[in-house]
Amino acid sequence: MDTPELLSLNKFNVDEKEPHIKIKKEICAGCTEKPCLVVCPAGLYRLDQDGDISFDHAGCLECGTCRIMCRHKGAIEWQYPRATFGVTYRFG
Ligand code: SF4
Image (cartoon, rainbow, N blue to C red):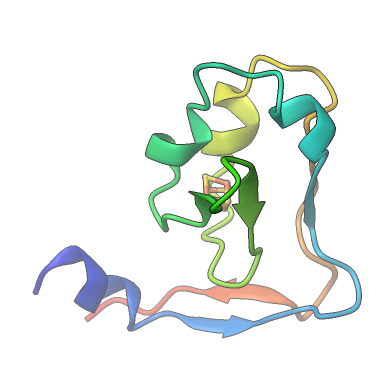
C-alpha cells in the first residue's frame, strides 16, 4: 500500500463548528519559507491562486508538525479536536 492508500484507512469525524487548527493568513503572507506546504503529511496546506495559504482541517492527522515547524508566532492556533472529533487511526 502507498501512503495515500494507508491514509484513506483512517476515519475522520470532522468538527465543522470549531476547527482545531486556525491560521492567520495575514501573518502567513509575510512568511517567505512556508514550511507548512511541505511538512504536513496530509498535504492540507496549499497555495491558492493569489499565492496565499489555504488550509482545511478536515483530514488532519493531529501530528503537530505544522505547529512545531512554523516560526511565526500566532500564525497557527493549534489544539486537539474537541471530544469525539478528529482522526481515528486504523492500521491495515
Ligand atoms: S497537525 Fe499534522 S496533519 Fe494536521 S495540519 Fe498540522 S502537519 Fe498537517
